[in-house]
Length: 148
Image 1 (cartoon, rainbow, N blue to C red):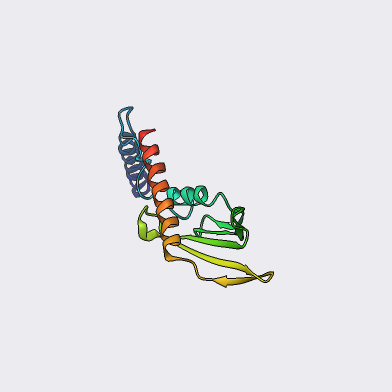
Image 2 (cartoon, helix red, strand yellow):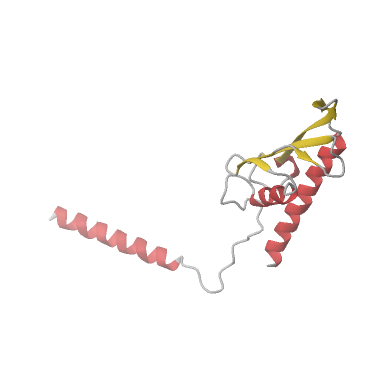
């Protein structure tokens, strides 16, 4: 008799739980998911920062991209207007949030001297400008996702 009571109680609990879950189903008027939330990601990092970084660095050939780790590394890029100088850029996305401190840009610069490439300092303004371009583009992508 105890076995039948226990089975009946379990069945009753399961039926109640299923009824409660079915009541949780969304209606047609349910709130749409906020695509522009700061943590939109199907990859390891913020997707707006990732896409904006790829867009910004599209002028240079890419050596490495790791969407889970948030790293993009370009190959050496020589501007045709200045063939005696080349740059290599690394972008690291540090977080899933769309924030300025979730982005780190590093660059290396070399100049041609006597047929050899020699390391040369990168101006801080160059790195800051790249960060600003990426952040602005990420915000545009987010805004576009909101407005549809």
